[in-house]
Length: 219
Image (cartoon, rainbow, N blue to C red; front, side):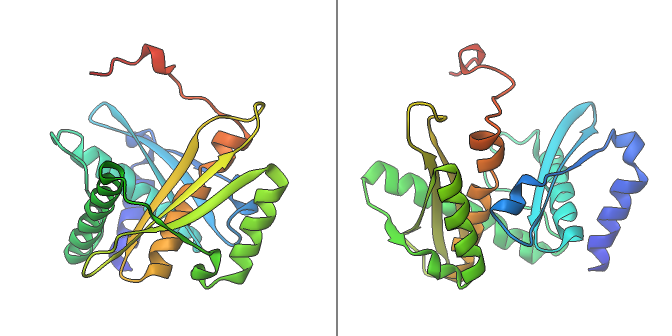
């Protein structure tokens, strides 16, 4: 915890130098009760990086946002920055990077082999309050949420959550969130949090990307 506080103190002490901007997002309250959600931006070596953190403890939510931004700044020159992780303990950083890579591997394997995922009930979260909130908010806004399990490894479980809206007047597309952890409930919660926190900005507020897809140069 001491190292965590050092990172927070560093960010706040260097806020002006980093051009640090902090936004506390409140839209998540309707979907994830008792959660705090922070979005930050900072400038490192002339490059603007972003971070987002969500947690049931407010200092940890801010810490996660700072850590993600620092991670992106540190890895911006890597040729393949696919599975990276920042943590105050090296062993935990390595474990999280491995599980992030494992989640990508499972998603690609299911896609290319046509292997179906296994649908899960929200009861797997072992959190009746959260499940009821998701169900109520989904019905209110017409958002469908589906939680599924992908093929596990010998040491980890992988879950994916999808969210979408039906109807011609609603935003098209599907939002997704992935989770990989030592237990299926933990992986499922990670997937739900990653997916659901996108619903407000994209489906409800209907924010659009800063650049239209047609203007992007994709090779």
